[in-house]
Image 1 (cartoon, helix red, strand yellow):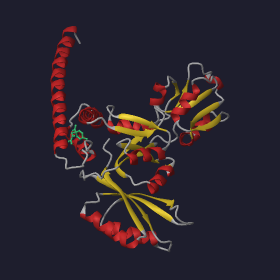
Image 2 (tube, protein in one colour):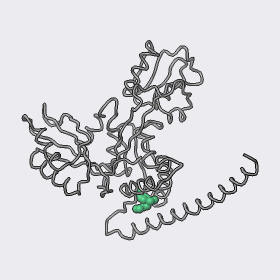
Image 3 (cartoon, rainbow, N blue to C red):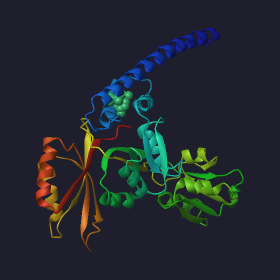
Image 4 (cartoon, rainbow, N blue to C red):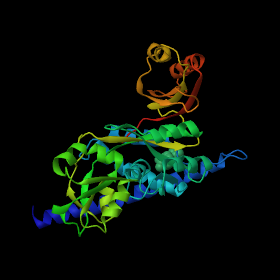
Length: 364
Ligand SMILES: O=C(O)C(=O)C[C@]1(C(=O)O)C=C[C@@H](O)C=C1
């Protein structure tokens, strides 16, 4: 390519950037206007809801439908995710709690879902996130709920039994683990490897193959593991990209998770129900009496109404020895007539039903 051609293309890019800049600014002014309308419509004593998960899901889906390349759908949606995040911050800066410290996969999930303009606040424990949301100290929380390799995150499920919280969204994150070392680490003498217990479990086979004699030390989070490595010459940590860059570590071995499709699903928790987006999921907790066939009976209305179950999990109810509750996720919104009918039938069959929320299915 000649220098002249390159120059001409750059002139075109400059002119396009100018147009994009004007369009983004126009969109941002429009969002400010939306913010004003939301404030003006408030009745006495009401507080405005600026963040609208159902609308965000619709916007991102539409962009993916319209996209004709060459950028792929996910890449394009990510760009619009950031534009919307910045527009929402003009209406109201959102405070979101996640399981810290900085650099955890929960932190990455919060930014993936809400974009970079959110005020992300690190919390020390899952229960603290629930408490902060319930107390209104933050608008939303991000909590891990299941991992494709290790299964349910019981702390999170149990917290739903204890708090009155609404599920407002879900986000799925591909989890890539790396073996991280510091500037002073003697890589041929690694005798200790720090990580969260779940991450150590997710890399078990790799560790058995490459570091069978290294001590595996479970710590509170992957980010905590990364922090510890800094001052120790014979240790390494297993953590993700974000922790590597935040704590200045080098990736010694990349993507060491045993399963290449390793991913974690997170839930967005808040205090207000979310209207239907057109492609939603609902989560409920159900307790049934301890008799043969109780679970089978419970599932019949789903089958009869053609409602797709996506997940079912059992936990001790905490209210009596050997009594259990079921966490059930299914497709559809609690306002859909077929879902309403299922819920009514379940209420009549069970000893207790709690609808945790209906929320848009993860888009990104
Ligand atoms: O449509 C709205 O209600 C808006 O506030 C606008 C907008 C956007 O930028 O598109 C911003 C924030 C909301 O969470 C959803 C969408």
